[in-house]
Length: 547
Image (cartoon, rainbow, N blue to C red; front, top):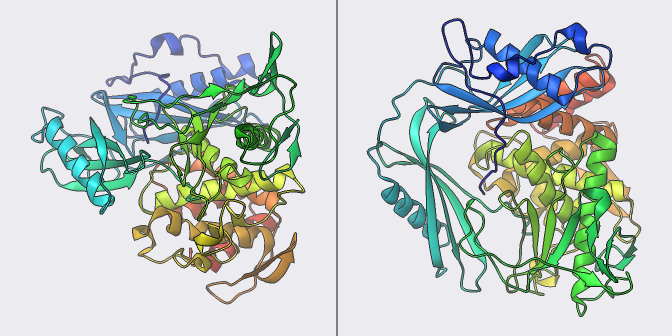
C-alpha cells in the first residue's frame, strides 16, 4: 500500500552543518521564549530542526540527505518527539526514518533510528530498468496469487535506497495491482535490487483483516450527521467531517498512489435522520456500522491518547461500504485516506463492518503516520498486532452491549463456513491453527497475520494475566512459554503503553526485540522505571519468549 508523505523539514548541508531549512531555523525560539506556555507542535519542529544541525553526524546525516517531518508528539511535561523520514539524493530511504527526542526546554535528549550507519552509494542510472522491475513485480504478484487468473494488472516502480536489508543499496520498490476473477483487487509490493535484479523482499500491499442508526452488529447507535437543505448526510462535522459512502459493489485500483480505476463513494443520505434497519436488505445498515466504527475509533484515540484523528491533524477519513463482489476483506488505504469494506460471501464472512475490524483497519492508518512498520518480517507482524491490540482497545472503549469487549478478532463477521469462531485469538493465538504463541528465530518467516500472534499474546498476558478465566462471558486460558504465572495490569494501561511505544519509540524496522525495548521505555515514561507496570512488561515479554 502506498504511503502519502507530508513534506516538512529541510535538507542538511555539511561543513559547519548549515541547512536549506534556514527559513525554518530563523524562527527557532530560545527555550525561554516558549517556556511560559510550553512547546507547541511548531516549536517542537523548530527545536528538532536545530538538533538535526547539531547532531547530524551522530544521526548519520550527510549533505546528500534531506528530512521530512512525519509526526510530532508533545508530552504533558513538554518533552518532544519528532519523527522524520529521510531521502538520499532525492530518493526515499527505506529504513531511514528516525525519532528525535527533546527535553522540555527543547534541548536534544537522543534519537531512535530504524537503521544505523551512514548511507553512501552512487545513485546513477540503475542497471535494472524500470520496465524490467515492473515486469518482475507483475510476475511476483501472479506467483503470489497462484491459480487465480488476474486481469488489468499494472505496476508502478519507484527508485529507492534500501537500508532495511543490510548495507544500503539502490532498489526498485514496485507496487503491482490487478483484479481477481470476481473483479476484486489484489496488490503486492516488490523490492528488487536495481543492480542485480534479485528480489530483496515482497509483501501484500492491502493490509487485511481476513476478517440514530440500526446497525448490523452494534445495535441502535447514535450518529452525528449533517443537514443539507432538507436532506441529512451521513457526515460527521464533529469528527473532521468523516463520512460514509456506497461503493455500489464496484472496485478500484487506487492502492499505488495512482488511480487506474476508482469505485464510487456516493454519500449516504436520509430524509428523517433515522438510518438503516439492522438487516442487509437495507444498504444503509452496513453504513451505520462503518460510521459508528469510525466514530468510536476517533473517540478512543482522542479521549485516551490525545490524538486528534488518524493523522493527528483533526482531518476526518471516509468509509466505503458494499465494495466489490462477495468481497471477503476490509482494508485501510493511505492513498485515499479511507476505509473500505466488502460484504463478504455469506458463507465464510458476513459484511466486514464490525467494530473491532474498523478499529483494526483504521489503526493501520495511525501506524502509517507514526512508526510505519514495514509490512514484512517481524516488523510486519508487529504492524498487524498493533491493529489487533489497539482495535481491540477500541471495542472495549465503546462499551457496546450488543458487541461487548473481548480478546477475539472479527468474531462478529465469521460464519459457519469459516471453521472457527473468530479470525484470531489473543489469549492463545495458535487456536487459529497458524499463528505463533511464542517468539522463535523463524517467526519472521510467517505471514504477518500469523507472526502477529507473539505480540497479541504478550498484550493479552500483560492486560489479563495467564491461566484460565472468563471475561465478559468469554472463556480464556492463556499459557506461557516459561511456565511462569503472569499477573495482568489491565487493558487500559496496555493500550497506553503500546500506543506510546508505537508513536515515540518504534521505527519502520522494529522487530520483536525492539518492541520489547520500546514498550519498556514507554512503561518507564508513563509509570516509572521501578514501577509494577514496568516490571510486568518485562515479565509478559519473557512469557512469550522475547527476552
